[in-house]
Image (cartoon, rainbow over all chains, first blue to last red; front, side, top):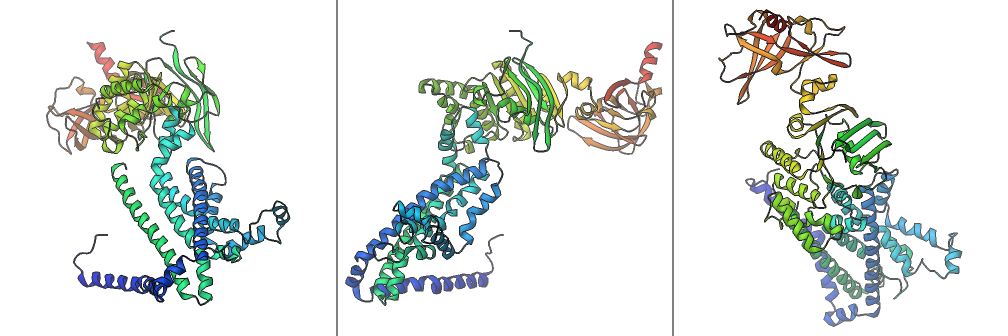
Length: 276
Length: 357
């Protein structure tokens, strides 16, 4: 559609509507978070964010995020690669399963793991005898985070790999290049930006995950509380300064991710212009 | 080694894609140094044959031989072939230099040798100075040349090209055809290219292999295919063929077999203005001009004769003919389609007059 240039009233109505909407639903709450966090003064705010438990929660969030990103990068590339470069039975089933975490509620995801690895599971005695703790421990939190974020990277890669086709890989293979060389020299440069973009989306989602993690965490202070869980605990304990200060940490992390995303989009589209 | 012995040979090759029989009992033999074309309509199995020679597809049955050795179980990268893909498949994130050097780097050639070879090839394809460009910064013709150089870099024994001119605009295509023919002749490399364009095949190839529905219909030089089509498909496919339901209605063509179908070509038909001097005036028939198409260097005249719309070529220097005009039509010869066979029939009046003279 051509950009509308001559219908002034429509343009301004739409701009105003968007601005009001964003202010009410986004800027106002953000401003409120900052205001509440600072209500009792800068010292109280600093004390809240340097609190031992806040730091532990932040560190656990970062840890779970790193795990999720690492695992999903490997899995995402492998899944996207096999779905686009090979023809096999059950391709549709795999493709559908990848999307499952998006459609299933995170709470259910948490419960599934609880049932699989918890006390009532037939696996529990084995895990227990090897001293492996999953439920109400860090591994459970990592598992839950991986589960809810696993479509993000492969979903970014699939369209790019589909559009590329297999000709370049075939050409490289005919010249005697091995699978790893083909991936490194031909495929990877092609999916680089999509991959980084997927990593950013995955990171953002992993940091904010609440539902599935909440079921598996057990809310042990300083042990299994991620930032979102910790914020809820503080809030329910009427520690508003603490809750909003911790929230502001999460907001800062989100803003960093957002800036990264913008930068990636710019770089990616620039490179596309030159080498389409 | 015998000059005429087959260098690339396919014996009884069959290939299925699920229920689709893509290649049926194909036998092909291409001598060393020859430039062969696989010509056929889309879906006729020509690309499948090429991909099997390259090792990109495996035949269900039959043998593929290169230089007398069965290579069915030899990976494509060890068959000594260079492959030019239909859309070139240049590595878009590599420069022209890196593209051409890729095959040599994979083979771990020393960097100085690589530089030398790439520079030599860039000169050969007339693209010196473009080594730092990316494929997207090249014209269609340049991309084609780079793809050609990339395929040639590791010194293959055989060059395979899949629809090498399909993605290029008409004007450049003609230039590239001539260029490619010269290049291949100069390098004396056994080459096989796939095309659906008969003009391309006739102009470029030493030998044409016509494929249809997974079978090889006929193999021969362009002249042979043109003047002696051995199957009805080839008679219809090669040249601007005009199908005719009942050739016995034309004068001086005697019934030959049970069927009456025939194929005409524009060059088999002469169209003359009434009163124009004509050697066989008495044996010509009268037709009505329905359409005239200006072809630049010539005119295509469409004339209706016995319910058949025939096309013939007239020079722009001949006296002008107009739509609706009654003209004399003389048919020199035609291909009679008789079951699975094709027979060339001449106008009987030609014989008579030669007897008189």
